Image 1 (cartoon, rainbow, N blue to C red):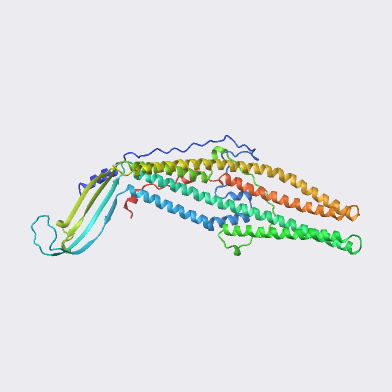
Image 2 (tube, one colour):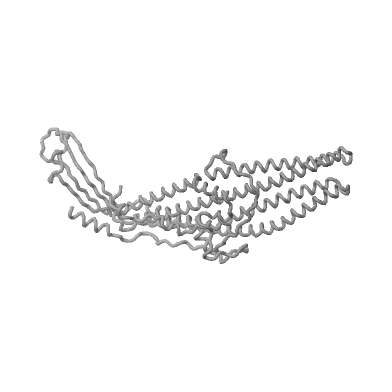
Length: 487
């Protein structure tokens, strides 16, 4: 045992070299600025989206409550959290390879040896023998990581852990963005429903007017039939809008982790304006998007796996030792003569393996190339989504202004058409046409306003929701001495 201790200490201090390539982040093509004109000034370094609570930009207390419920109870988010715990435990499993493994046991056995047992020529009495065996063995094994197999395995596990941490943030962003988008879609439907209900009230008054005039013989039944057609069409639109609203309400319940029958969102007008969103430069997007961080960390894990596959070409060096007590008599088990020990060093190098190790190395390199391509594809999608959102906000802002004028013009036309019809200058068809124009334009105005809010959500989502990659730097498992004494 006195010889085993310094040998173990010396083995634990061996570092050697780590097989495989040193990791470098893949290069991507970065645009200097956004192609679409940003509707507001680009963000300064001190400006940023609210981290983890970006939805507070909209200053809507109801949306805040729904988001908080979703962050606490969404089942997809809980599953992603569990995956992070799973990845952290796997990384600790990989880290355990850096330490010796010590096993202990207790053996109690009674056996009968055959009287005709082989003796290899030694003279023995050819009689059966029954005997007891008692032992308390301790065995210790340690792989000397001279060629970096264990270190590369831990590096890969840590990169996968960081990828899972970034993926958790991506799930959180997706859930919060989907909830906000559904919320504003529901509010837009509320606005449309109010428009249609106002139109129905107005059309009912028109129907009463033409019915009175018909009863008085001033107009024919054609005016009554036309007005009833318009009213019935509006009732149809109202029913379809209410059905769409119910679907978005159910989606909000699901995202909050609540059963759909137990949740009801109050009806509210769409009185929210899109907020000012600080837009970072394209070069900062790589550090702001959790999905990009997920893809990049997967590349790092694949790079480390190349090292693991490469280390299979080198010898595996294992230091082993054992000690304990063994005796035929349990009463003498812990006495000095019953003690035993052993220590050994083995090195096993591959010679012929049917091409298995080379195939694993090729597989690891191909997997690395695949994830590099996926990483670059993810960055291209990110740039596209930001450009789409900026261009969409620009177009919708212009459309909102022109549509406000269209609504005002349609209401003016309706007022004039009613006056001219009452004066007998035009037919009732002109009034109906004006009513339909008002309804169509007011609904379109509500839709544009809703789309502006949804597109603002999409821009925040495309910018990463205020997240930055520095938050995953601390999640990696670092080897600690106390882990060497844990089971």
